[in-house]
Amino acid sequence: MRLFTLLFLLCSTYSLTAQKVLQIEKYGNPKTEKIHIGTVIDYRLEGEEYFREGYIEDIRVEDSLIVFGDRYVNVHDIAELRFKRGWGKAVGTSLMIFGGSWSGFALLGYATDGNPDTSYSATDAAVTVVSAGLGYALAKLVRYRKVRVGRRYRLRLLDLRFSVDPKA
Image (cartoon, rainbow, N blue to C red; front, top):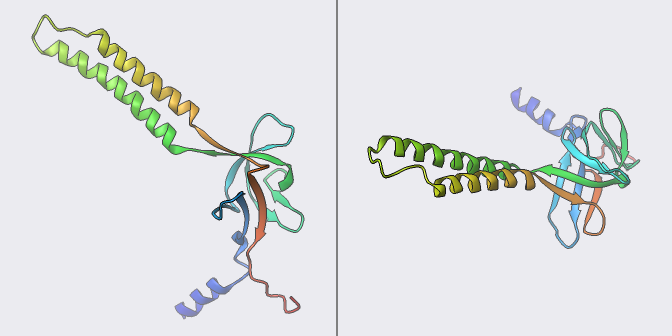
């Protein structure tokens, strides 16, 4: 009985609503990136200067529409997509922690070494400032990857469901 239930769920075409996708294609590259229903995306429309965030609730391939929670957007009106990069924030945070740790360990070492000739030096402060500043800049500058739709990139709506219509 379990096997029958599993096969029924796998073969049911009505439960495959996530088989409608927004596909990002790059000119000259056979690899594509697919965005499924239920994904939150950041997008900018033609003629606007700011990005909007939207949860994809449905995709209407026949009308070229993406259904968000509060609006319908034509796929041809999207000028740019924005994706968060996790590595920039992680590397930036690591550099800032490294800079703070360098100063902390230098102060602790100079305070406990018992040598009155050593002290917290300008090079220790320079390492801290450069590392923390570079980490902060990296975290802010490499935060997003932007895909401008136009000459090199194209958006396409696809319906990958199997048709159960006997006339088709």
